[in-house]
Image 1: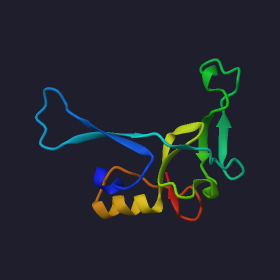
Image 2 (image 1 turned 135 degrees about the vertical axis):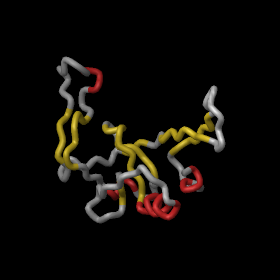
Image 3 (image 1 turned 180 degrees about the horizontal axis):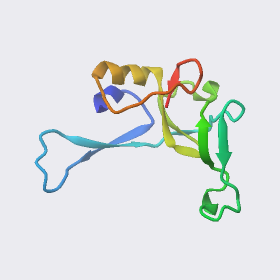
Length: 122
């Protein structure tokens, strides 16, 4: 998978060695650190965590749940891999990254358009 992401920004690759396990190949952890404020509230359906939330008041203002996700593509120009501000559990990739994954036969990724134009995926 790391070859699919060669030449792109927004993440760091860390090699991993698993103790007490014979590794026949090298494993990596990918840390995606780029965060973009691009959530399109007008086109999305969501619920925000209130300031008086009894469970997570520290996350007040963050999105509790999102049932329809849309982003403002104008704010993501030139970005290929990023997380959405206040919704950092989602990873957004460009059409280029999606194509690279598909060409390489990477499995386990599910892509859903978030621009309505099929250009950026989560």
